[in-house]
Length: 248
Image 1 (cartoon, rainbow, N blue to C red):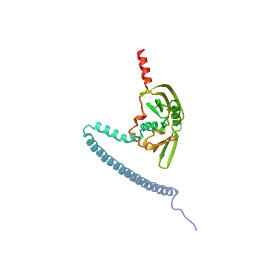
Image 2 (cartoon, one colour):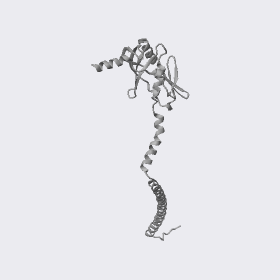
Image 3 (cartoon, one colour):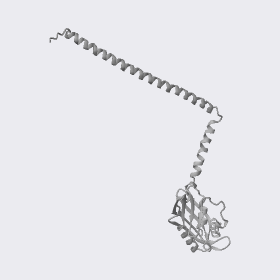
Image 4 (spheres, helix red, strand yellow):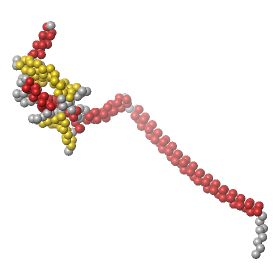
């Protein structure tokens, strides 16, 4: 069988080129259509964002105008801000009134009880300085110090309970004999100690109790009244020394 090629090679190459051109044009149309669709979708999204922004800006402007129309706005905002912080500050404040409960709890029973003339608290150094007088002399003073060293501070928060020492060391101060307002010879004393910060912890930390060798006092609500017998004026000997120094 004899085959005769009636299409010249040039014509055949032309047909191949046209077919390739048609495929390229078709692909270009498809890609162009997809690009147009993507641009339209992005334009719709952008338009929606712009519309939402316009609505939100309008709402902000309306509320701003209403807020600015309030008389003394700066004062109102400042007061509201302060009021919003009161509860947080109140719940986090230290309960300094517990000092009086501690002093009352560590005071030994008679005949070694003492009378305090001054209680000083230094919150920065976390120290308590006690000044007073003891009718039973050095024996009462040593009993007081040992009671303080044996005192514990217990914190109970639900089922959790922790216990720490009130202090680990006492720093001695001045001691001297003098007469009190009743003419009795007493020992004047002063000393200080560093207290554990759990003693004055905020009320929201739990129930705080002070435990001495003989007593236990719940200090959740510190007492408002302190017995007058706990505090006495300085002894006559101090007054005499002061008068003597003035006469000099």
